[in-house]
Length: 310
Image (cartoon, rainbow, N blue to C red; front, side, top):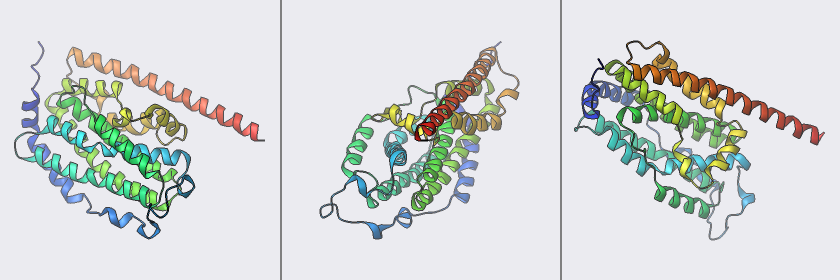
């Protein structure tokens, strides 16, 4: 006979002590930092006296695209706050305090990225603002995810964002940009740990429901920037530069979390959860094969280009 699953409200109540402990841990280890400390304001110039032109940028090509995608993703914080609040707001204790803390910390990311890109003239500031307007007006919607699915999603998403930001900084070939992205990545990692640990606790409370949520999110995962203008074209360019591609997603995002949660060692699952785990195993095998094919195509393309140049 199947065990009755907890409602979202009951689950949040059950996990309240864990959320409180994780919030306290986060507050103790999170560093205070200030966006203005990372910006080279001395290189700034007035745009009315010296209008922007493409040759002024210290970033080029895919680095420009990756920074724009990362910033516009961060710009959608109003929607993320709304969604996180709807998923996790419960009472006036740890959950709501975490939501406010997370939102405040995330807000610094778009501040420091925009200041860097505008001061260093890395992107057309007019086009950047138009794209921000479109992105925020488009918003983000969780597509009806319940609390457990939301918890699984943000675990994967925070880790994916951390790695995307970190690799963007390294790819930029600009020490200032790299330092900024390394700083943001530290925040994203701590946010991932909070959600990851809450999901670990959920697996002890309701393992079958947690298993189904994890499987569903791995198989249906999309980054929150997928709604922005020309996202697919830009994502392909970012993938070809190996900033964030299927191999990175498979090896550095999905599997580290699955191993942490010991997904394939979990016992006591009901029939639906066991079926979800089997589907997940098949999906992961296919994802690995697809990532390998993409790597082989990229290598072949690079070889052809090298031969043409020779």
